[in-house]
Image (cartoon, rainbow, N blue to C red):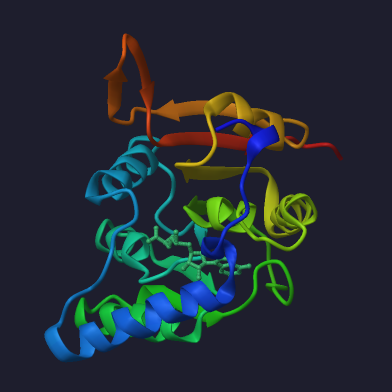
Amino acid sequence: MSETDFCPSALGTKEHWDAVYSRELKSFQEYGDEGEIWFGEGSMSRVVRWINAQKIPRSSSILDIGTGNGMLLVELAKAGYSNLMGVDYCADAIALARSICEQEEVSQSVNLQVTDFLGSFSPSEQFDICLDKGTFDAVSLDPSNTQGKRSQYLNVLCTVLKPKGLFIITSCNWTKEELIKQFGKEFEIKDELPTPSFSFGGQSGHSVTALVFQRRDNS
Ligand SMILES: C[S@@+](CC[C@H](N)C(=O)[O-])C[C@H]1O[C@@H](n2cnc3c(N)ncnc32)[C@H](O)[C@@H]1O
């Protein structure tokens, strides 16, 4: 899908995510089911592996934007990262993430907060790394003012991420070229993580794109 025919949808609304995480929280409480891992287990291990391979200090501050059930943070905590934060505007997502962190005994390393990333988020310090797995996709689908929401996302990201900080995004709605177009003014691309490819009708492509950007130091 190209930027010009991008279709807003209910998936971009808080009501949608509230309903999803209300169900997932209940399911965790009743059956211990941790819920959906967006883009599959591989999408988490790719990010954790890449961060590990860079020998990034375990004390680096890492923010997961729109953390959902917080499983990416759980995996990072298990890999030894101890300064982790997750925000989500759904209270039930954060309640679910908290319960999972307790169950996995990583609560000490993970700070979780109910926050609208585009509205009320003002952390006391900038982060070394920001992660996004599916959240920019959701923001892009917001039926009200999608272009404005995307600009707001970029503004907040640049406020909360240190200059030269890393932004690792996994998306199923945007291609590599489109993401570079969205973020390229403030960020340079540093790496592309391998994602499963498909081929159809003689064409091949990727259903998921995972990129590492580094914030330019414009100071
Ligand atoms: C596709 S889900 C991905 C969840 C999680 N990152 C994962 O990989 O499992 C998108 C997430 O973004 C959250 N979200 C969307 N817009 C947000 C906003 N403005 N502020 C905070 N969270 C938001 C939703 O509540 C949802 O948890």
